[in-house]
Length: 277
Image (cartoon, rainbow, N blue to C red; front, side):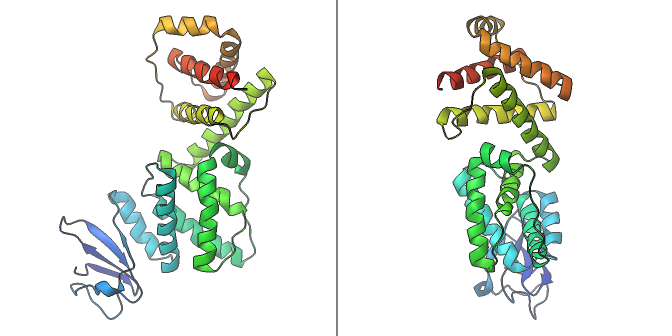
């Protein structure tokens, strides 16, 4: 491999046999070298291969500011998340998470702790991401020698959520707010609390997340058969009454009209959840 560009003593770029640019991390890998020199492969510690050209350019700007230790630990955390969550995670997380960790370290040095107002929602609606973020704090302590406050669990988990749906952080925040609002309508309507560790609750929340995402992005979905819609409406009147409350709330506050398909499937999922009580 030949050096294409030297960013600093520890980071250089090269191109592979498909002419795709790669970022190579390693202590001293760029020291006393020039573009066109062969890379000392014994110094390679991490290789970043990002598919999205725009993200790659942002990441190149990030590596100029973020210490190599944070870039390395970010890669380890992203690898952990991709393995344990088993979901497609946008490469953009390399930019957002490394930048977040970098500033979190700086804030801790000034005794500043940033609390996430969505901490409760993240912990309850995104348990898998929250659990991985817990492990991420252990990795950060071991690799950086810094004890991050527990408030950072929610902050890191939110980066996973954002990278999963590949959307803006503001949309994620709105989505979780809407999810909580819908759950409140359901709880008040039925006067019930749910076992948040149950499989049926997990299934319902998973379905609800995708519905909330459609509401926030105004992406409607309707492929229901009217006959099935009428059958569900007739057979589950109390559950359907709750769905109509949700429909009116969303129409008023989010200017989104629920389709018959969305009403149908949300009724079925909610009915299943209620039967499991």
